[in-house]
Image 1 (cartoon, helix red, strand yellow):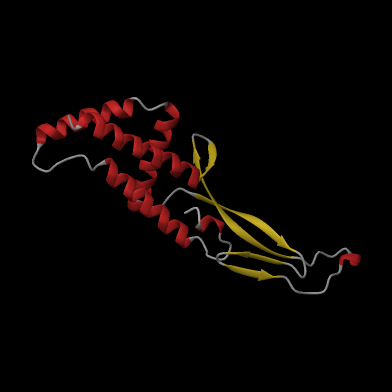
Image 2: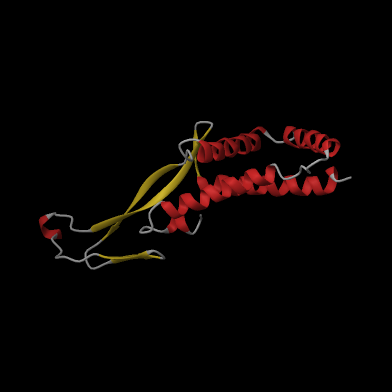
Length: 162
């Protein structure tokens, strides 16, 4: 996702694809501690998970819950609630803009003396979630969520398997 968010000419589809995969993988991990046909163990795991979740700070819980809801929206509803905005990049006549997705070369005659802006422009999509009334970059929120999931697995390995 971080690589895709830096591409002006790739469109939003690759980013959305990776976001969807990330959200689904996170949900799979959250439910991965159960074992078929072992109700007693599953009850223990359920209790452990509820205790672990209760230890999250309000900020962590907000991200944890938001991405679970966003995954459900992505898979079962109208898609992720991510917001796409555009960051405009102006390229002066004779200049270029390049990234991993392509190059824009601005050509034309400079008419600066006439006060006419003949620069070319392109835009890079920027992806945000609005969580608790605050607009945050999707990749930053996903990084926090990934860290929470790593902490959950580490805690499980250290405590719940006993």
